[in-house]
Each structure stands twice: as C-alpha cells, then as structure tokens.
Image (cartoon, rainbow, N blue to C red; front, side, top):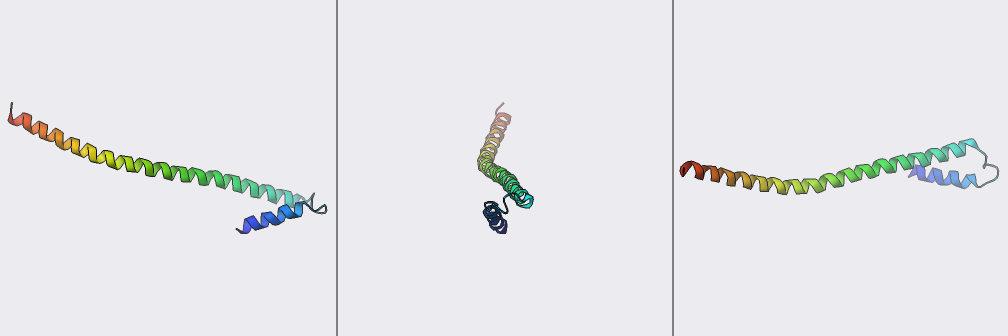
Length: 85
C-alpha cells in the first residue's frame, strides 16, 4: 500500500516542470511498474495453479472411488471363476 502511495506521489511530481527531468523519479517509477508487472504475473500463475489443482483433485477423488468399486467387482468375478470351473 505504501508503494502505491509513493508511486502516486512520484507520478504527481513528474508533471511539475522542475521535476520532469529528474532521473530518480523516472527510475523509481520504472522500477515500480516492473515490480507490479512481475508480481502480477507470478500472482496470476500461482492462482491458476491452485485452481487447476483443486479442479483435478475433485475429479481424482471421484475416479478413485470408481476404481475401487471396479477392483471389488473384478475380485468377485475371479472368485466366481475359481468356484465354477
């Protein structure tokens, strides 16, 4: 939050003729923009990874239950084949 306020002050100062050619203001503004862009990319990729993981986790739990029931059915069929040759 402090960084956003400082950047707002820097942008405000850039419009004054006395500060318009200040290298410090230009560098700090560029640095802030770079940090926001890089942080946004990392934040979005992290959020995307979490959402995809949760969506596949729900599907996997359902599939595990189905696989367990199929294993039980296969076991019953094998037992039937052993008892009735």
